Length: 479
Ligand SMILES: Cc1ncc(COP(=O)(O)O)c(C=O)c1O
Image (cartoon, rainbow, N blue to C red; front, top):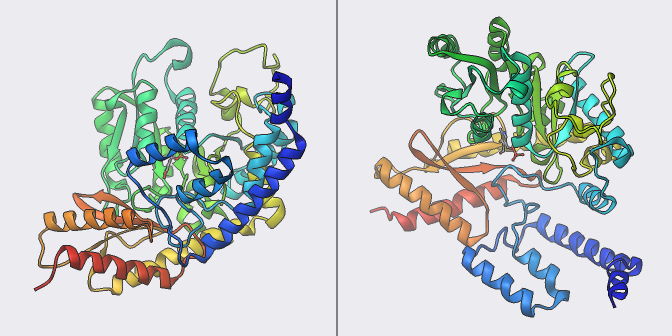
């Protein structure tokens, strides 16, 4: 009986059959989503209802219906009216690399548990290092997401710059990191995980355009020293999540150099632009950093999650974690780049290098240039439409594909406008024709879009603005 069941679970012919069905279904879904005509981006339900549905399906649902229901009940990232969070519409080939990774399930912690993907990881990260502009001797690895990569980079920074060996001795001084107040919250979280507490993160105010105020760095640094803090790193956002605005990385690099600080660049979103002829200038100064983070699952067409963490001096990628796990790791003086668990936070990780390697092998690096440049161009096109529209205003002229804007009406005060924009976003979510998100900047409620689909057009932008306008007029009829 048990053997029969296991035989069924591992049946090659069932797998072949189900696999073909799945790919056929996903190809149909892709075709339908990309057309973006009648289908919704999201069929939103309140969590209690969604839970009820899947609880019932678990008991009574027909397994043959599973995929259809799953597709109906999930958000469609490949839809051109998806303009929400910074998640890639995965290139279909990376759906296949994802399947390959899940199925082959190499553990990746030590070399023999992932020989090919480990070597591919080296090929890909070496290429990324040279694209960033790092010198000979740079290297890095892939890890599970920007949050973990930023934490890992700050651990490396601390190991390298702190006045004592925190890893072995614990924290003896009040260590701190400087960063823009607009940085992604994972930097704040990393600092707290590292035990540095609230005082360990020095938030620098921003300019009118939401980029870090580099004229405030010196003052903040001196103040920190007077307060007994030992600053060991400064972080630049490339760009900041909420606004898509890049910090001035050249100024940050110079400041870090002058003060002997580690300079880390969080290019989780914007790192794909290293490949863009048109937009790589936004990252100017990043080549002077000590470390940089680039998410594959944001602007590089890959599924979640895969992040490159790159180090200007490759030896720093070997020293972050001094943990001994001798049963896994060779006792070798030579830095064994190929035993990845020694260098990354994870022990087991998925074979994420397959996504990068297969995309690059199939289409070449130009694919990243094309994708990023197309999306940033679309961001600017949408900004022009908003600018020209009398009923909307931008929070700031975008640098990338992230835009914050709001409906405005001079008959309403700020409080009413906040309420109206908030309601508009909720109605859009519940309607499901478009998907956008929201953010609060300096007390004002903005609608936020990230143009993630290269097949989104000006027609879709106009449709969205019209849709919002209609909602706004219903919420606040004009006399
Ligand atoms: C600038 C920035 N850094 C870090 C992160 C976190 O990355 P992840 O979601 O891969 O953990 C994000 C996510 O939006 C981000 O925009």
